[in-house]
Image (tube, rainbow, N blue to C red; front, side):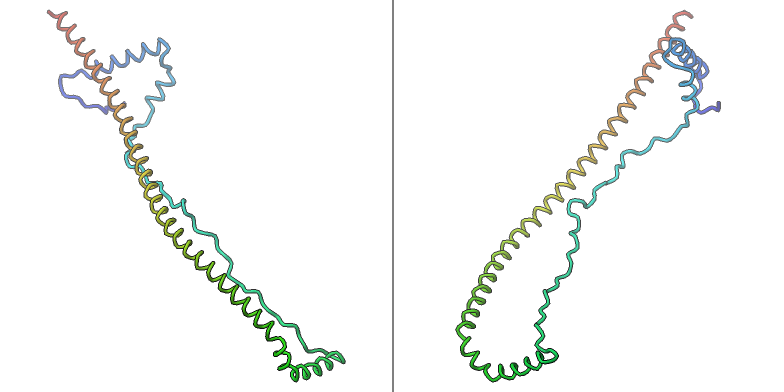
Length: 207
């Protein structure tokens, strides 16, 4: 194995490694560790710690998808009945058409009351539809303003909630990293305590 640890003079690195090997052998003999696990740990590739603090923003505009396409407006076509014809029927139609032109002023005079009633009914219906359309348009404007305000509030709340989740994720990751570092520090403190005790025992034996 290549040397990957550097220590100042006065520290017995070989002794420390021997103690680690001894502890590994003890755990292997007691059944805590297996040789396959030790081999996997020895052959594990050392990778740098990734930066989990940069949590990407996953906000997408899915609250208000685009409306579906509406087909273009096509008015219902009006096709008058043809008055022309062929043969005796067509000749009769042409003759009656000339006679209708002669009696058309009389027909208009006789149908004037009916035309006036139809016009009045059409005007009343148009006014009723215009009044309903005016009220519907006013209600639609009020509803549209309320909907737009609600949409802005929902977007703000969604962004705030998303930012809170991102910050909580960062805090959780930082907490896990702090736990890992605290465990490493505990192992180091334990190692230093054992080393101090070993040094005290050696000094006691020498004295």
